[in-house]
Image 1: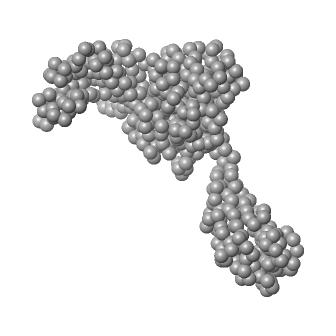
Image 2 (image 1 turned 45 degrees about the vertical axis):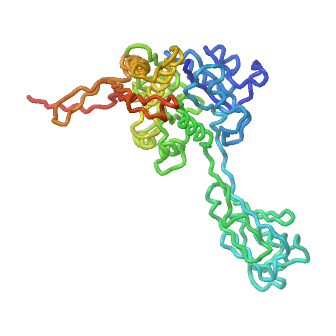
Image 3 (image 1 turned 90 degrees about the vertical axis):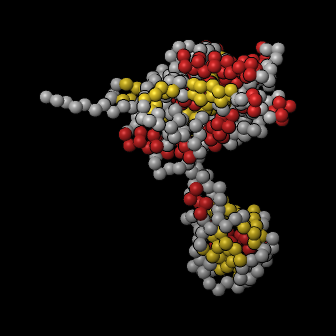
Length: 478
């Protein structure tokens, strides 16, 4: 059974058994019993179960208490464990808003650690203002060296913060940092904190002259702008790509449609060509279009006839249209975002139904992964079902026939199709939807025979693709 999973950082519901990491739900009533409307994950369940058709089950996996980033490889309940828990195949992943967190701006900081009293004439420069330690002060920005290191550092803090008494702790006319940096002293360490939180504080420089002074770095560091943390999303998307899973994400950050911003999740995944991930921009923070899309795309019956579908043009039940302009849409499209938008003031549907990599659409990735899985299972089942697969042409044929069953299934469901082409002479030709060529058994090496490694089976298959746009040329003659 193939299904999707919502990862959450929330605590386990009371009904879950001790140590339980994963639960499966077949309807919204059961989901709401564990995750009532007061929880952040509730509307993700609504988005999934509101779609028709949809997969029969939805899983919820606990990541435990998380401080970003999501440590996928190190958590005791890592999602690799969840991927096969309960014997069900979890294919698509997403995270709820407990892991899609909003972060406040963080102020940059730096430190100066003193191993001893500074020598007469030593300096410390912060944000281009140089302070000189002196036994006898003589000019502006001189700091009085005290009888102890604690007094000296207190005098320095007064000079930088503009407190204390001019002419006593520091020389008259000294420049203060209070507009840009605050200084605090604890024991032998002075901590400099940017007044304005954000990444700009990371450029405030620190320089010292004196062997007794050790700086934390050449600049303040650790400043971060307010916004949505992409760390958990990026790590999940990278993990899905590496393991052949689909990933569905969304953001409501205005950075998504700002063409000059290069830190939003869409930009980051596009820059890394993540063809496994479908990312939405949606301006309703409480709605989950990604889980509605997940339900829609995992509802395909690949054993049926003409059942495959694209994500573009689909209406996602219960998902509102985002208010976007043409300029916003163009910026979103350049970063490979999808969005639920209103077209012609009437139709509300998904645009563009693609993944975060050039020329990769969501239906392509999911269809290929399903094909790969079914092909692997079909070939493996030959080894299970037969008493022996001989190292002969007949053995190769057994395996090839299993592969052909799957290839034909994907022709029937519409994912593969004959390809119209032109040969080298310019003639129109039709290439078959798939071609299976078993390796020549006569060319098998002695080493491969000893390892019982059969010759490779080569398959060439053509996707049917889809038309999303068309130019209609009309020659109107009166």
